[in-house]
Image (cartoon, rainbow, N blue to C red; front, side):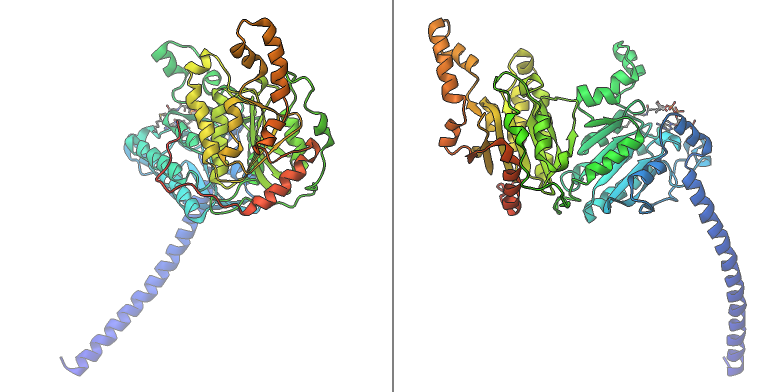
Length: 537
Ligand code: HXC
């Protein structure tokens, strides 16, 4: 090849590429304008979800849209959305003609009271919020990120269940979500709010999370709806009876609370999150407290009635003890003979467990045992100290409870307390009878145990004891009853054995607990290494 030809070749190639470059640049610029327009229009479409008509229908039902819920939940302007352009991949049943950017769930992260949280909010206006495979992938992404970063996940559920058109792809999507819920359990707090339908296998994602709340009248949770129930069993039942917020928050205990509308639910959710750590790697936040740690509570000196059979309100005891009387009760309407919830003492989050003498004399039944055990395990998983207020005549006797497996369920509560390594502070306010005494006792690694002067600790109450020991012997019976009460109807038997650290004046209880929490803040206690224990489920 001669030099002149080579020169010519380079020149022409350059000019061609130059022309090409210019035209490509022009093309790129016009393409950009087009792409930007596309981005804008898709974003607008994503924000509108299933469209104005469906949004109006959603509002008409008294429900907020998925985006409005996120806006209320997060600090203003803090929500960062992911995957707003994701579209479903289904081509069957003409689905390729109907696509919505973002599909039927909005995901991302935001700040709640200045702290990070991951959120997914199902959009009922898009295919009824049903779960497609991309919908599942979006949820899985936030769950994965939340676990790696160490921040809670909040799921706002409003969905018709598996996307029917996608068949097994949708079912597999549920499995992906469930797997992540389980792996995230104990690592990050997971909270579900059911704000619309949640049926079929879909119910298991909320059920796998730590707390599930519902909205009255607009939400329901069931494995199968009323029509299927009728066709299979013949039972005629309404949606509300089968899986409404009232039923689940009172009878089944599946929901840990019911709120009257979306707004209240989301505001209460913000309140709950303020008590919780971001993950098991972090401590719970300590808030500045205006309530003096050494405040005395004189009303507690007289709160326990002289008659040991007379009830009083343990909720009032709790409110007198905690900061600013602020107590977030979990499952207030279910298994109410036990009270569980979060509060602060000198600014520190504590989990409170208290027997409620006003309900079934504070007896522990099956539901109360399960409720207490699950709460204690949550506190232990997230390093939240447990304060237990004991006034319990024992586990509820009777064939209904025995047939229902009170032994197995009561063992859950025992297991949870025995397994817990967080600081455990216990106050016996009155009765601590039988197995129920053992729960948060010294031998079960209780750190600090107090008795009020009104405490009675015994194997069982006087009536039961006399009926066993002096069956049919009337004279001995009444004398023995007096002796029994004399012997066990006071705090000395436990105090002289060192099974309580002190007998304290009720008015000083707050002060003592706040001091103890301070002392126990760096407590280290570990269980033997193992894959996992085998709680009697
Ligand atoms: C696809 C669905 C859908 C679904 C609702 N839609 N559910 N699309 N898959 N699962 C669509 C509707 O076609 C409708 O679309 C829009 O969402 C709103 O639904 P409506 O029926 O008009 O609303 P409403 O009257 O409020 O009734 C809501 C509903 C009902 C009660 C949830 O839609 C319903 O019964 N859906 C089916 C529920 C179900 O059986 N899901 C499968 C459960 S089994 P347009 O275009 O008209 O707005 C399951 C298995 C999971 O989930 C297993 C995991 C292990």
